[in-house]
Image 1 (cartoon, one colour):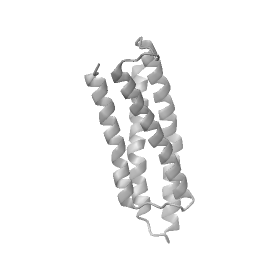
Image 2: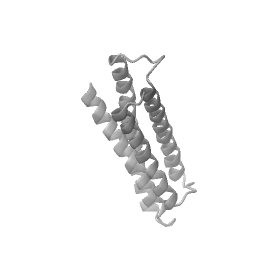
Image 3: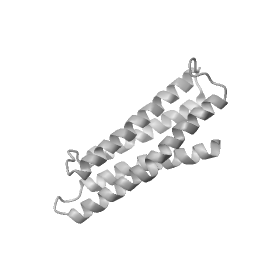
Image 4: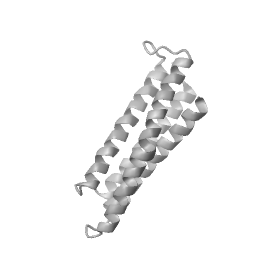
Length: 140
């Protein structure tokens, strides 16, 4: 079960790293490039719905199963686990916001620059580092 959890998590985070990078390139397209716009919308939609969302669902369910199997209580989890679950919650919010941004691109309503998306892309790195540190250090 743990191996499937890791595979799903890697796929989810790969998508979370790549989708904002697609947004960077999409935001740089000239407005007259309708073919490019269509191509990016297709790539973003397939990544979000075909890889990221299924991987997120599998990661969350298997992660909750692992927490249960390891004997941790959801009523009184250790501090490190509470913080980790909080960070996972932030990742879920980030994932949902990526969906909102994807929809705005599809409707030609993007209001952000490529610089915004470059900075936005770094948020997942910070959250992932936090999650890894919490798992390794396990502060009490």
